[in-house]
Length: 218
Image (tube, rainbow, N blue to C red):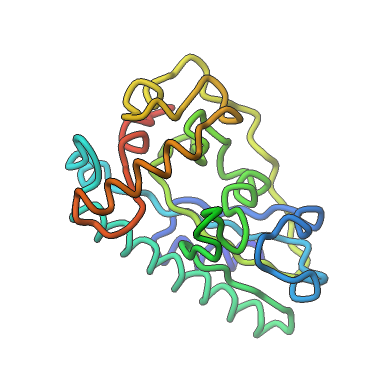
């Protein structure tokens, strides 16, 4: 079923597809009770490339054009994870599609789970200095979503790579929230700037796009 599910993802426009073993991550899911994910040891990660042309409009912050593009990609991701889940269920297994972008704790700014940690296990990319997933071709210009399942699937290997000497995201961050290591990323400073952008740039959502725009690992 690995190849069949991958075909579903790619035919829907996905750029990346991978599967990782995530049983040990279940206790770290922020808003999913353990009994809801019981037996779901595999995480399917799919990613869709963000348009570089759209991101060019983000010069000092997010734009309405970027907001629309961001939402449309999330919509396609959710449609695709649904299709994958239905295909899994048709084979008699359980599948739990996780929304691409849905905050469940606004104070902590957390979702049901960390899509990037699943993607990391699935070999989609690595965690960059900007604390975002970095794909070898797309950089951070990729949106991701997850399907949890108990279907036995072959798994991909994590990518052994990092950002090397590239520090473009550090240079462009308007609040210096990005540091040498992603572990030192200043979440508070970043969030406050996103709140400012949401109002000042009339986007109504916590997005930025600046560090995403300059991330080009290849």
